[in-house]
Length: 193
Image 1 (cartoon, one colour):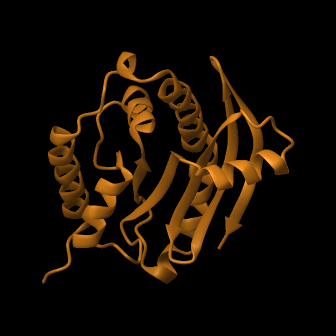
Image 2 (cartoon, rainbow, N blue to C red):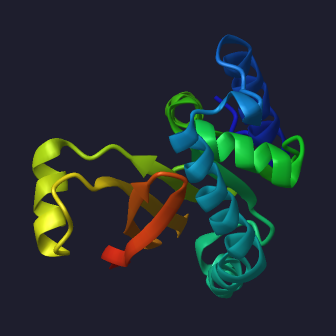
């Protein structure tokens, strides 16, 4: 099988996500639950900061090694997220294009399984979404941070992958009380490779 060009790879990903979004369309913001709305605001703020600050710095670092690794110096930025993140991305970015594509993380992974770019030749990834915490993990975190037993928690997973063995990420703990989310601990887990 002939290796795809960056344009072919990106077009294929966009087409795959378009088909999947017909089955699972991005909802209108007013249809989000109160919890999803709060997460949408957090993920939207994170996306804006990534695009303005962290992302360009990471891509610049990636480009330092690009010739050695045969990486494209203008990679397709692929954002893997969840429903609140999709709503935020669509409002902030408009429709996906050849250089910036966003989709549900499981839908992006489906495409990467059938059309891999394992060496990250064409793309880099920002994974940004909320993980559900099982009760045991939530209890452990409430105890670790001296929180009330009734505090509703969620973990924001944030990972930028620029290439093999080139990732930066962490988990950020949020509490949700009524209308106001509160950051309990930024980077309660973090990693660099």
